[in-house]
Length: 352
Image 1 (spheres, helix red, strand yellow):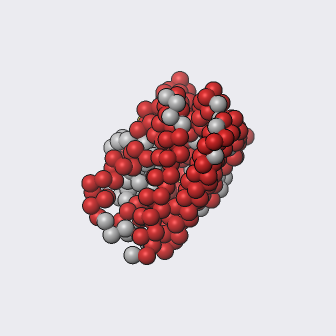
Image 2 (cartoon, rainbow, N blue to C red):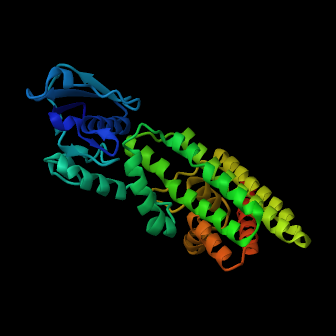
Image 3 (cartoon, rainbow, N blue to C red):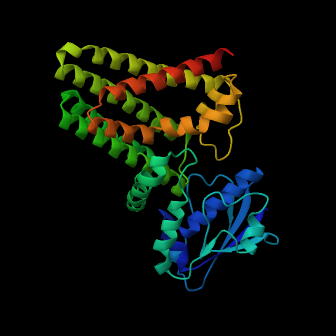
């Protein structure tokens, strides 16, 4: 496909999930251009009802494979309308035009009254295959509601990532006090952080703002949050019971294991070039660790349920439940066991 005509009227300005309809069409056509490895010519044919001052050409920074033309050259391969809402990644070189012509997988909006429902459906489909059970049942429904509000602002995903990092900082400050109510308050802040942490990815996917740098920032903030949790808790448990100062020592060991594990996974990702599986429950770095470990039975038999039980969203909620049951030391014990096993597996994968 090389040429696309977009029929634009007042619906070009309708904003859904942070983008105007014309922008979203252009960005999805750009995805097709990226998939095909070529630039696609786009001609915007405005309705006579739209004044010249209201006409615009999308200028999103991701539009690298779209060539806007004032006059169409040659016969158009496809004609689209700004009333058509396209979800993310609907454009593929194999079936995009066929699906549009058959009116499959897309929505046709007749009036602005349909925008709210369309936006909700769109965000419901914006989760990740790596989401754990807690994320799917609890965190995502809340984060999507927050994201809907955030998409009406110019806030970027990275800005949100940095903005909410105050929650683990405040949470660790509560944990340092060590008493029951402070630990509960601190872990509630970590749970809130776990919920809101999903918004940056939702914003990025809705606005076509994904970037490796943004993903790395999110990952390292999560890692630092985990370190702050165990150090704050270990310090707090030691302060409440001075005779149990070994809790702080344990927390330092656990923090070192968490950092070492992530550094090993980072190095493994750089040295191992395994193709990422589509819709995998594992992040690429964990997928590479298991597949390069030399234990294929792990991936087939144990990984699915192990991963679900150790996912961060599940762990944070479990930690809060442990604290409510006065079992705070087990938060350190289990964090250390999981980090140590993962580090050993990553180390074996690296030297295999």
